[in-house]
Image 1: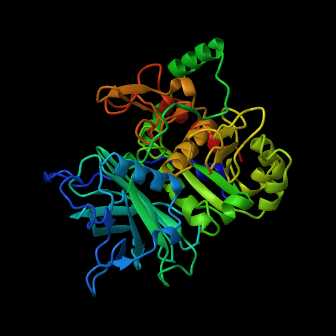
Image 2 (image 1 turned 120 degrees about the horizontal axis):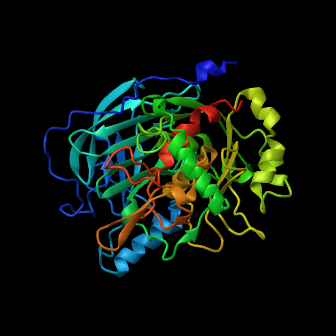
Length: 458
């Protein structure tokens, strides 16, 4: 087992700064025929499925919409666009795809072409660190020539590709809708790609997290801590924190909300986003979440625990006690839960055992009484938010900024959820004018001040 001195790695954090001096036209769906043009492809490695038969010999094939496991929140959003005549009655807000060996050689660096709304672009990617020999790799990079873009891809040996592509004004999700080995096209898992900004968002804020708000005196102590104990090393160092990811019967068997699916690949894609340069991997945060195992060996014990529906943190601590975490060198235990929490403490979507605690529970399924739908973006938000509490991140240190008239954006530690249009995946910070924060809203500073302590839990 490695020593703790080896776990704290201090070195210059190099964010992927790619040559983007060429001014190109903005990526947009407005000038394309969305009936015939897929949202995203990797040329020569993508099978595009359309609702109508394409020309003979083309890549287009028919599918029966009812036979696909398209999530209800996507079909509802697409139907709403049709009802408002924003799209035609024979159009959809999504594309259905399959991939044929999308990244055949898992090199440390990659450069290849993609299409977005029918236009060709080039992505430059670097493989993210991974100590697990599971055939799953994640890549982080940018779109060449597109300022403030980010690409996160996770691939496995079964033609699965999950990820996100973001740039100003857009956030695309690529996810699997059937990740069984034997799938409907006889070869590759079926995928769906859509814009988060086409999805119906909650009409009212959703109470998100079950962590209690601090008292006034605690807030004053927090201000004193921020002013007197800033760890200046943190801005140019990266600290590794070891994470054990666990789950229960339902999510391990139904990670897509249907029967079947590869929960490990799906979960690895969420961790990749959490480690990206807009979240924990950002220069002024400097944390790498190193997953030591994706473990479902105790899923029966978790699922049958009497507190699983009312207080999943209690169940988690009972099934994975701190003594066990210490024995395997896990600093944090992250539980991706497949059950909707009910009971006297409410239908929240996430909880940790304490600030600077070692346990985090994140609900991966829709809430029974609110419009929280448990989609990919909300899952990522929940994971980053709850792990943020493990690093002492605070709700009151989140930051809200208004843009575009009445549209506001909250940083990731806010205790309300209004969807991808409002809830960012980044922490409040004052490290740069481009980051959202001020002297009293700076979760990035809190995290970097205690990240070494968190890395020494086990």
